[in-house]
Amino acid sequence: MEVKIGIQNAARELTIDVEESAADVQKLVADAVANDGVLTLRDSKGRQLLVPVTKLAYVELGHGTVGQVGFRS
Image (cartoon, rainbow, N blue to C red):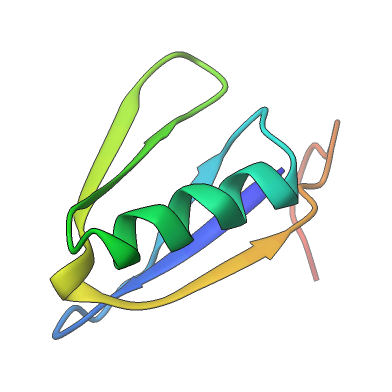
């Protein structure tokens, strides 16, 4: 699943492909915000993304495009 994260005062958003479901990612975000902590996500290649929740602008959950090759129009 594709997760897009907007960061305050940053021109670009972060995009990460995760193996968790939308409900699992939503719970991770809610828990991090409730604890005023750090949102930690692991991508499908095993890398970790750490974002302090005080810098979050938005989190968008969606479906990745599986197997897409080439240019998009």
